[in-house]
Image (cartoon, rainbow, N blue to C red):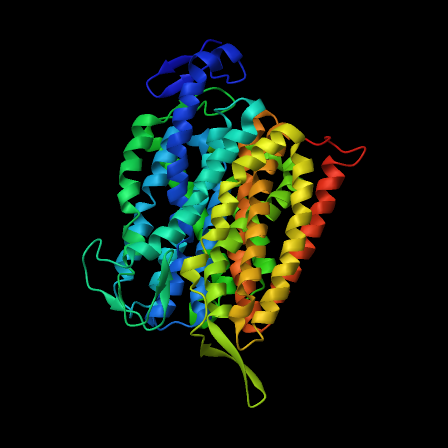
Length: 540
């Protein structure tokens, strides 16, 4: 079928047709990719900026405990991961253009709300929790963005295309970790300043206590990007209207209604899961149900609620739910969780972990180890936390290109071993630092090994994209990318929670031991499915 362009809709799109690709396809795909990337970047930034904001809230004397601050990061993490489940199916139901426009524009709500609430140190915890829940919109965007881009590119360069979208999109983490500390140093939007009660910092150096700061800029600064991006997505992106992508896309109103309805399901199940887990003092039920029970429950409830939707939506969803009958959906969910789940979880947890482990002296007082004495020689989390996510995002396209050449499973296996070794090294230095009066002595080897760990996750992200693109057919590739990214995104909830719990128990190294065991399971899974002699698919 010859390609036809009607308005912003594409009919007969076939990027694997060399003639079509060379004549007009590559130009159209590139335009959609380069609008998708900054939109995804802003999504990651709004989703994960609580990791930086909570450090500064601690420096400013907001009246919240460390556990309460870790909970804000975890709430955004759980919300964003859960919203990825319905987002995995947005492209078929609503079309790429309408989906990316609405999901990008909705980010204005949590960004503006965060800026408003951060003007007052007396803002109650529940209001921050609500905005953290809404920040999950940024996390959910990844699933629909990756699904959308997968349809625009030929299979032979899927690793590159998806690596570029995800890798540069993930620069939202680094961009946020560099930009937010800088914009808090001056009155970008006016308003009343606050005074630092503890040392802070930016990319270029430490900021002493007593300095004036503007923490609310951390939310409002994203409006400068989100508003023009809303126009770019509306006027610059396309919807592929072929049977295997978005055949039933209706009007904008109809598409937006479907998206909002599915998002409400995700918000409801995420909020229910948080209520089960959080203590009563945090606004939860007080039952403090184990996360190992709640996370599968939230996933199951979200999928079940989507199955109850009547009408034509259910027909389209049922077609895409066929991915759950494919064993490779589950193997790749596990493997992708190892790579992306680690990347996103460590990105969310690292700033506050640096502050808590290295920003305080760990002193033996009357036979009891204490962890509350500020360390004047400690590193600033805001100076260094950006490095790991920066490297992880930077090398992700490299992982895709290596996988295109050498095979996705082989590259994934190598980086899995590197991840396990680096995690054990981080555990060693974290344990040493948390028992020392001079934890800064262990900071540089800790940071270098963490950067190695981040780099390995980035390469592994690119290689797993290649594997998914080769294992699944063109109709299932998009939904599988969305689904696996949804499962993996729970790392943004799980890892900060585990770090917070183990730091409270004074055994932060146990968190890394647990992650290493999980990496071992993934190594065996990848070998069994894709590398052994009689593998289901040989080194895809």
